[in-house]
Length: 174
Image (tube, rainbow, N blue to C red; front, side, top):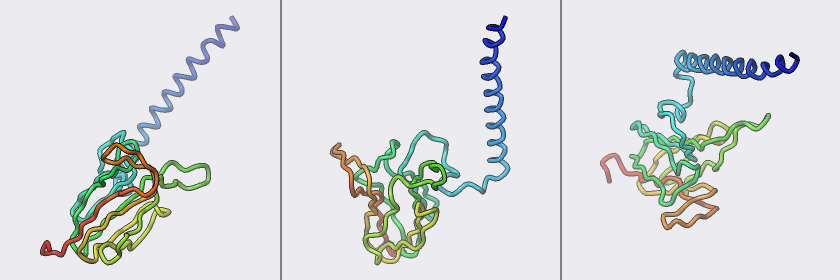
């Protein structure tokens, strides 16, 4: 009799855990539908995916794209984007989960512009994970970050890796 009583307890625990998980999922869904504007730009409006891009960017024209490979690896050649002088580009480097009392950390550091006469980093937020860049003059820059990358040849390297090639043109296209 004693063994029967203990044998039924794991099943009760599993049922309780599943019920609690169901309640939690309903609460999360309700919170998301009640406050759709609370998500940051890099997390909202992107369809659910198992892809773990190293970074996400958006432009004033509404373009929002993940950068790198789905396994969190930077790819060479990088993605390309075109901006007109005066436009801004938002860039968010994907962060991991908080570790204890430490805030989430980016897998790759936020890049600085190699030519501030073409593209200038004008603000940094989210503990250094998000930057706003302004197109200030015609030209092309390649934003790079430090980390692991796979090149078109299939070679894998660690160090400076291209993240995004940005071409800036004047409003007339020149």
